[in-house]
Image (cartoon, rainbow, N blue to C red):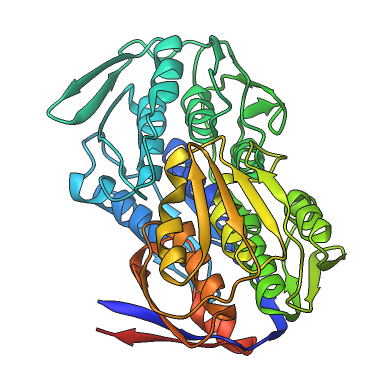
Length: 419
């Protein structure tokens, strides 16, 4: 067991390099099952969710080699049609991509109900709706989802009730070998979807419209392996942008796609923070003083729900009142109680949180309830008086590589302590 210890009050100065996008890497890793060969993946983020995904693939017969240059060689030719170990899949929601990949390759899938961060009900009903539309039969036996398509999947039109990233990615993966054409309407438009489609197209798939509301997949007979570099992580980049805006200072955030960050950049600018945009980097400069605003979470290109807690931490220090309307996961607000332990004044009415900013926060012992809540508590601690100890480090490590090391290199007084 360990905690993150932060002594607040230091400004952040310097450069920080952003890792590959976890939410793109997860479906791409499981999609490698489809091409039955040796893939080389670059810019995979070295976070615990990726390590767990590779363990799942190894348990199913894949071979994994980590190269000295940071790339990963993944040979999926030996993957077997069997149930993935429940002790692995129950710990990570991204394991749901196994269903689409195994259905496409073997015509059957058996996967324990996926786990992950605990912030509300996140059903996979839209995934199942897509699989059934493609001709699969679905049943649940002792907590295991069993999908069957003995005669193969058949292209179909699938209208998603909401533009779910996970469902869009999973249906794309399942449709690659389906007979005919699959059309996903009201599809998610996030960069993760574009990255997955680019990877599969590099392998020989025929996917068009990724990044728009309608994605069309024309089934192909087979794929071939490839080399592919994962796109930079927009949420990690946004987290550092909000961190320097809150703590004050000037940080150049490198290896990013600035277009992916537009919603974050525009909101920071509205608050009075300076954001300079370059070809593959953004520089954030802040005095540590900024005004309150209102935000609402939405699907891309709106403000991602994965950035809501980080902005919530920043709002505690803003001048005036800020409000957050959460339209994606109402359970996202569990971190508010921890901020209030530090002295924040926050009221919650259904899916709307109201922050009375400008009050100093005091360091204390707090606990992360999920990945982004952990990042928010770190941000709050950077500007707080005194010392904050943050538990739940395992959540933070699911999506951030060396968060404490990168912040320390920027001047933060932050370290990992054993308990």
